[in-house]
Length: 337
Ligand SMILES: Cc1ncc(COP(=O)(O)O)c(C=O)c1O
Image (tube, rainbow, N blue to C red; front, side, top):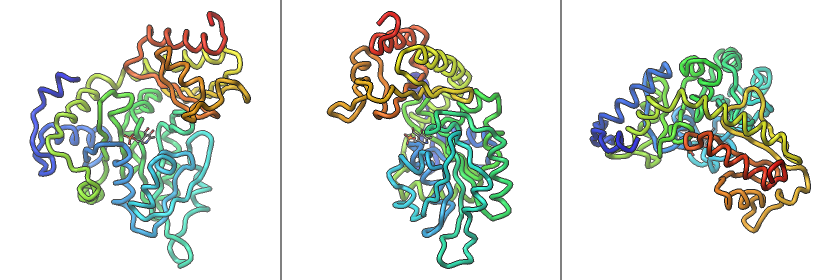
């Protein structure tokens, strides 16, 4: 990947002149079955552009209560697009079409914010890195389209969903007007996301990318990493899923550990410790004590006292997984601890 980056032909992407960025945008648009695509620095920017280019201030956006857009983008929907979020919850990442129908405001009543956009997420991080079946998108589309709503998919981990489900990325993206994908997560690039969609939305997104400060110059250096990832790092996501499943099974065998990993899970292993477990107690940085204990053994995880998260990715091979399992056993009192 580093070699590909250093060899990349570049130009000024703010003027649309970077051949590597242009190649990436064309490839991702084709891969997702969309007319246009735009390279941006982060998944957050891709999502925020999707909101900004498809709504007006005072509109309402339906999204998942545990979604990244609603919880982890620093109130960007309110601050940058001036929209009101209408969160709907579920435990499996799917949105209930009946709940969408009940939540939609058509704009006739001046008390109510008109609903403009529905956002979904796949895989769904907050619900455990689970694949949300394409049928849910179709069911949402069936109620959203007749009501004039647009649809955005936060596909930060869409390639995980595609590999795990055996569906083409374009099939998972088919219902949506705009789709964001990230190259900096399981695909292993140092930076970069793409927003894809129809030409009108993407031309507005292009303008807002400039406004939000996301126009980059010789960005081909980093876009080359994303192209390399598309060529080399997509199918291998299945290895991450296999290792995550192994890790979840190993955690389930430890006392006081409850992994939340089901058949639809992919590369994110969420787990909790039994209430009152001493390693679930927060340290002076607010993280469960287990986090620093594992870090001292060379295993990096994140989490809150109620829920921890381990992620498998392309830098975790079978040996590294074995090392991680041994560290978990040593800290949590399993065999070999
Ligand atoms: C589902 C989802 N969407 C969007 C993002 C944002 O990506 P970035 O960190 O590149 O802004 C993340 C980051 O973890 C995510 O999990």
